[in-house]
Length: 251
Image (cartoon, rainbow, N blue to C red; front, top):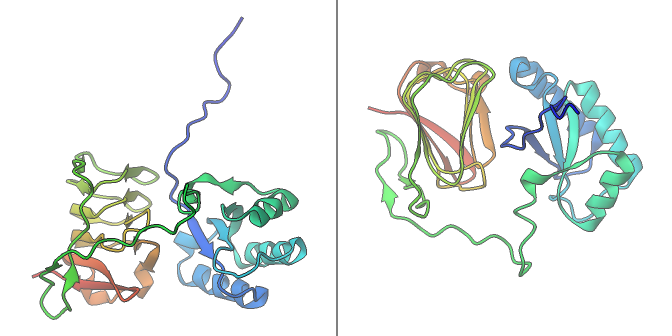
């Protein structure tokens, strides 16, 4: 018998957009997504999107959810799953024929039913000149940081699970580097960098030469079109302050 598999299945970290719905206004949501696609088509055109109804007090019915999916498709993105939530979300996913994405389950599945604990208050770290002080990254439990020495090329993704990521080489356009902690890049960043992937708002991004397509911390992101042109090519630091993503040059 031929035991060679026709398809090899691997389960790994997926860099995928999570659209958290805060207001069930289908027309407004579709228009907001259309504007994102128009502003940054290289990032968002035909991008895979997970729909997260966790920001609503009530999960919408199947007809409303289908209208949202149709609106998002017309706007230029491809809804591929629902974010795991309540049993109502699970029933809705079955009605829609969409999977529940396992990556988002950890924040809901807690034995005691409690919300995730807030990060401890670390001592403030020195900020770049002209910027407000920013908190130091939260400790990562003693795990050593991951070091990537080879260039990260277009289409590749490097992920540091529950630790910082240090990249010693360039991150090319179309490449993605992700860490649950902070991201340090000692070469040019032309792709995407995502820190605090599991919600650590104390994480930061450091980059020696900044040309990023997208930077994000704990889900808060900015694309190249939203970044001041005088920061491009500079050494920068990216951090989260009052739920706003800040970018400043490093002296």
